[in-house]
Length: 68
Image 1 (cartoon, one colour):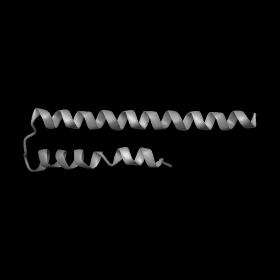
Image 2 (tube, rainbow, N blue to C red; image 1 turned 30 degrees about the vertical axis):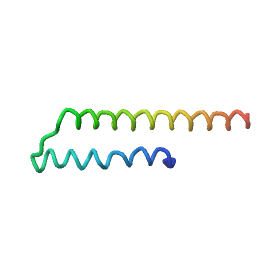
Image 3 (cartoon, rainbow, N blue to C red; image 1 turned 180 degrees about the horizontal axis):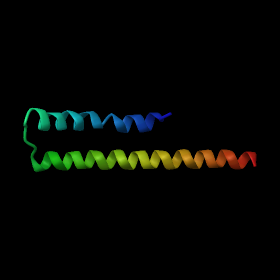
């Protein structure tokens, strides 16, 4: 199950997908600034997922340690 934080980061990808479909299907062009924006979105999603996963793992490890 994904946390609310993880899902909120995934919501950023909808604009990237819309842009990619416009580029591929409608033969629209992308400016360097738009490509930079796409890269920034991917980086933020990856970092957000990594941070969320690390927090979840730490929380689960602390729970396990309490029972041991």
